[in-house]
Length: 149
Image 1 (tube, rainbow, N blue to C red):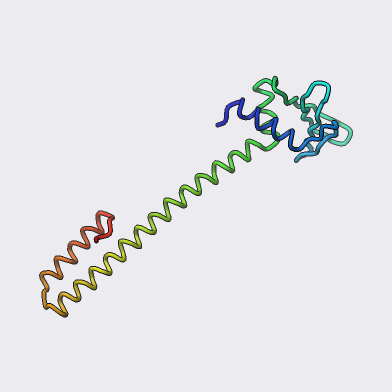
Image 2: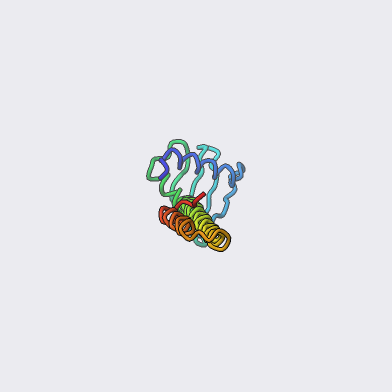
């Protein structure tokens, strides 16, 4: 979770990026609007429903924690952070799954190679004991999760 100061910095940067310094309201999602107040050097967050305007909070360097949290949530930045956190978690999970699959491929390839080597020992050298040793070693290595070789 971000600190109030981190949220404040993001809010101020967001407001600066979307608002005109000419004090013109900018419509956000869900009927929210934000306008820059030149007199107080702050942004005012409100909701407009026809002619009715509900004032929520100002956003400035001196806004208290409750105002910052309210604005952060209403402006969708908290939801954005949650989506980003989930995206990072999914990327990590995908990476772990990919490594597991690659390990399984390597283990399978090692077993196939051992079977081929054992077959050669039997077919060419007529050495069933060596073939059994090769297969047993490959199976034990596969149980441990590491490809033989």
